[in-house]
Every structure is written in structure tokens, then in C-alpha cells.
Image (cartoon, rainbow, N blue to C red; front, side, top):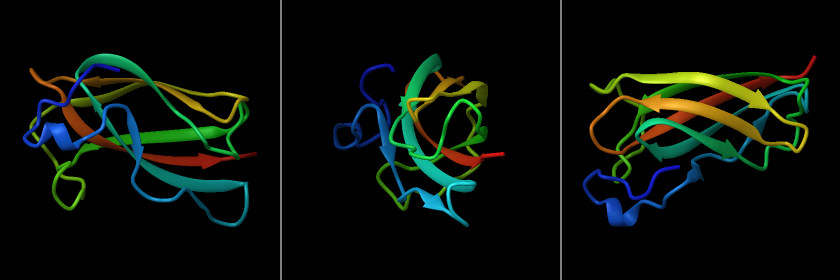
Length: 118
């Protein structure tokens, strides 16, 4: 993950992955959702940890949207193109993500995660 966030108020936003909501398991470990904030720029890899029901057999879907790190943290359609390149569910209950934020400075985005165990 790259360094400091270039957004206004960057000194208030931690580097790395920040969980926005508690992980939600709807109906038990078979399926659930999570939302995490990630700061980055360009193509980079990061890990989302502490996802107790995710293993390498899980089906995981991730979408990205910009958020205001100092505001209400609601997703919005910003001008930066955002891409999820790869999502790897691992047996150590983490997700490995390769993402792209095509913007000249580091932005904070929200990754919405849905998982299903079959």
C-alpha cells in the first residue's frame, strides 16, 4: 500500500485498510458482507484481514467507490476510474486484493465485499 493519503484532511486518515462496518454474516458462515476503506493510487496490492468465514473455497465479490474520508463516508461516483483486478480468498481468512485507482494522487475508496461459501 502506498503512503499518506493526498486528500484534504489526510493527516486524519490512517494508512492501510480500515473496516467501516462490522462484518455481517447473514444466515451464518455461508454468506456475508463487509465494507472497508482503502487508501491508494495506481495499481497496488493490499490485504483485508479478520474475515473468519472466508477460505480459499469462498466465492468473493468486490466493488469499489470513492468516499469522503472526512465526511459521511457514503460512496459516490467520483471522477477517478477504479478497477478491481484480482481477488484471492485465502485459507488464513484474509483477502488479497489487486486494485487500481487511476488518479494523480492517493484517494480513499470503499471496497464493498460479498462472500458465499458453497
